[in-house]
Amino acid sequence: MPTIDTDDILEQRRAYNESLAQAADKTRAVWFPIAIMAALLALPALQFVGNYNYLIHLVLFTASYVVMASGWNVLGGFTGYISLGHNVFFAVGGYFAGMAFARLEISTIILAPVAGLVAGALGYLIGLITLRVRGPSFIISSLALVMIFRIFFENWEFVGGAAGVALKANSLPVEWAKLPYYYAFIVMAAFAVWASYRIKHSKFGLGLRAISKDEIKSESAGINTRFYKVMAFAISAFFVGMAGAVWGEYLTYIRPNIFLIILVSVNMVLMCILGGKGTIAGPVIGSVLIVAFNEFFVATLGASEINILATGLIMMLCLMFFPLGIVGTLARHRKLPRILNWD
Amino acid sequence: MIMADMVQILVLGLALGGVYALMGSGLSLVFGVMRIVNLAHPSLVMVGAYIAYWAFRLGGVDPMITLPVALVILAATGVLLYKLVFEREARSAKYSEMTVLLTFALAMVVEGALGTAFTNTQRVTSPDYATDAFFIGSVFIPKGQLYSGIVSLTIISALALFLKYSAFGNAIRATTQNRDAAELLGVNVNLVGLVSFAIGIGLAGAAGALVSFVFSFFPAKHWEWIAILMSLVVLGGMGSILGTVLAAFILSVIAAYVGFFFGATWSTLTFFVALFVVLLVRPQGLFGEKPELA
Image (tube, rainbow over all chains, first blue to last red; front, side, top):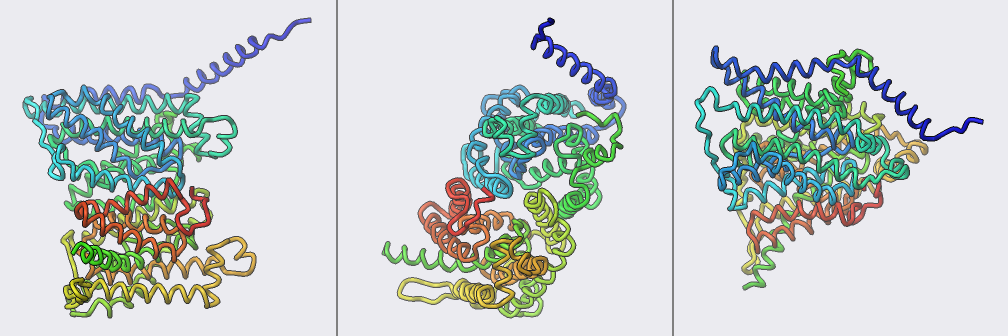
């Protein structure tokens, strides 16, 4: 009589799952994101043939939002906790690296991961407190957080109060001055997208998605929901803080009203909602579209007030008619192009 | 001398509390009936303030006279918003999160529209009582804040009487307590939702007329008010109007003392820190019974 070995069965199941994953991978257009990366890495070569500073700025700006929106997505998309106060971590990262740059002259690009960790640690602590409530109460607490940090930074003399601190511009010639920051943001954006893919497909990410579906059930299924939620908060704060670190040096100053304005945190949220919350490609598509919208409204209509109006209007329409976002809606109708299926 | 200072600060705190109470009660009503955390409420208060401002600036109309007009205009806006936006969300699975985000977006739309139309200059209406004061001994009571406090408490009392004694008010309270049971007993909950939403937004307009001479304002200021009003409704227990009014007085007095001892910058911080502490220590607030949001 043949004995059935449990190890054998597990091994067979693992092999079967792997073959399924490989089959899925064959339909995946991995070349597409790689091609985009290659194009973006080569883009600054345009500077040899003309002045493309504006284009480089736009790509850099978009990449910075890809980092932040992908980070926000870990908490808001996977876990289902909407935070309207993530610009707090943008500010913390920015101030940490900016002050280190101003005092010790350490490049913020080198410091960015450290600044991210600082923001992440703070996120962990804040998450321990605010993640005790959920739904609307959590959203309100995140808004209050912005107000508290704004008052705090505006009155902290060491970091220059409301006037902020001016940072030294780098000494590169003007056509190359943006490049270090450009590459830093491109690399960070690629890392953020890759990391959110890895998170989504890990056991941890599965737990987060379970929490967003039904927190009580996932708790009774043995998921340590509190730890999972707080870690998701910390991870999303890490990415946002990292983006903030380099942003200050790029602008050559740090000041409360570039970090702690509501538009920054709204943009993160809106990009994820427009692109598709909880998807990998969603935040990227959202960032590209929203940055393009913002540029259109500021550049052509010349008024930041209209920009706020338009951003709010887009957000309302999106919530009312496409709550799943572009990627989510297309995927539901099975019309998602293969090149955008990054999940 | 110190004693007189203490009394003076108490009076100023109470006077401000009256305005906050009216701003918060509309928010509380809408939350109680509709379960909508209306982040756009303060921006609609701003609309009321601009109506009062332009009536005063162009026609010399006293904000107290503009008040009912602002109330009606905003109530009509409320009906429109309800029909266009919120009615269709009623069956959404993530209703509460959805409506928070929607009202947040609406707040941006209103802010952007006001900013485009009227720029971000600080405005204030200045009827002669706004800068005048009564003196009782050495304690002064600013007339503007006293009048606005009286008007606000009158309106809130009228609302409370309406909710308590009219048939429709009873229907509103029944819906607040248990929507399904109310519907089962024949209450037209959709109409109740519409009317209370309109009343809530109308109260924002009325509060705006009062705010126009109590604070100086500009479109982007509503973000600060959001956090202040949220702290009131959260401390009061979301949905409890009495709780909101009490919270308004308690917190404004505390804020006034904080401002006196530590400087004006830190006085608004009182509201934000209170919001945090209440959410964490007692999420249902003073009078809330429903810990479902916790």
